[in-house]
Length: 275
Image (tube, rainbow, N blue to C red; front, side, top):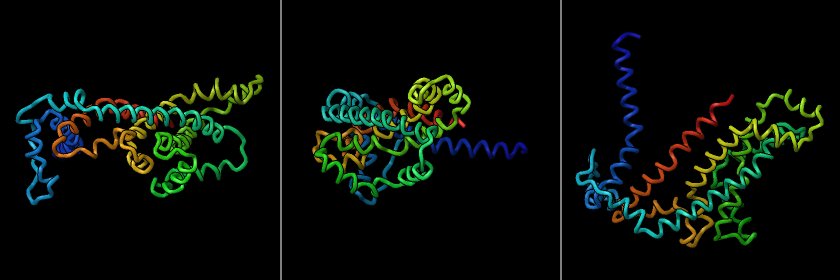
């Protein structure tokens, strides 16, 4: 590769990096912009006029008011925040309790027909929520969980994604270790707790982090199963933001991004770092 090609490649990579960073910069500058500036820039988006929306590289009148408003003056923000916490922790705990043993059984136990069962897991994992929405609605309705946080938590607990991902990690455990443990008289439960879980901890951590982010950002499930607005999670709060509350919306998005970006990076690294 000659010098000119290196320069062109560098310029292309720099342009791509700027494009990828623009949404982040858009959110940061919006969180520190005044309400009048946001209304002036984004009014065409909400009023659906033929005028073009505009955006400044830096806020014309920087202010901390949106952040203060989001943290101090928005009680509905905190109610939905704690709803998100309850939903996320419930789903995360349930997926680990159900998914870890299921993945171990599919990976290491001599179950009849487990190949077909794993294929079924993959098929279910590829199905979008819209396909499974009606059956899930009927189940939570018959269990009396409709319009409760349990209606969102229970179907997600039995998600096939944690089982599929953990199966890959457990399958990579050397069989010699397990055979040596069985020869020493260890039962399958003891092998699972003392060998499977410690060696599969990177996969368990990856599942926990990715499931946390997925559960925190649920939108369709709460919209389908929750009718009472006081039960809504934070993921339904941001889409309800109007132009007059746009500053608080940017501030809330920035706070969520800051709190979640590290976990997202860890989840991606852990899920892709093991062969």
